[in-house]
Structures are given as structure tokens and as C-alpha cells.
Image (cartoon, rainbow, N blue to C red; front, side):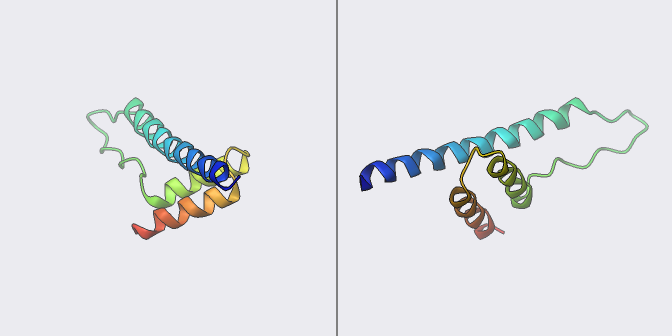
Length: 82
């Protein structure tokens, strides 16, 4: 039972990591769709801070795609790098 729970937790952690990568990729893709004209100043770079990732993880949690425990664990991991 404990081994099965650990495997489930590991799989959910991998899913949360993959979701974070997908979110960052989507943000990068979206920033490429908007290109400034030659008379405009360049757009600010897409926000890729840990805080943006935490916000996106919060949305996943709120949508029921990850648990609060997974959210808290990933949030702590992201904040370690700040």
C-alpha cells in the first residue's frame, strides 16, 4: 500500500512538472504571436518567474487537476529558487 501511494505521488509530481513545462511553453508561444512593429518599443519578456508558475499551479489546483498537497510541495520547491 505504501509503495503504491509513493508511486502515485511520484506520478502526480511528474504530471505537475509536465504541466508547468506546458504552461511555460504556452506562454512562450503566446509571446511569439505578438510581435511589435518597427515603430513600437519591444514587448516585455514573457513572465517566467516562479511566481507566475505558482499562479498557474494554483489554477490547476482550483480546477481539480492537482491536489493541494501537490500544489504546496511544488510551490515550496519553486520558492527555494527565489
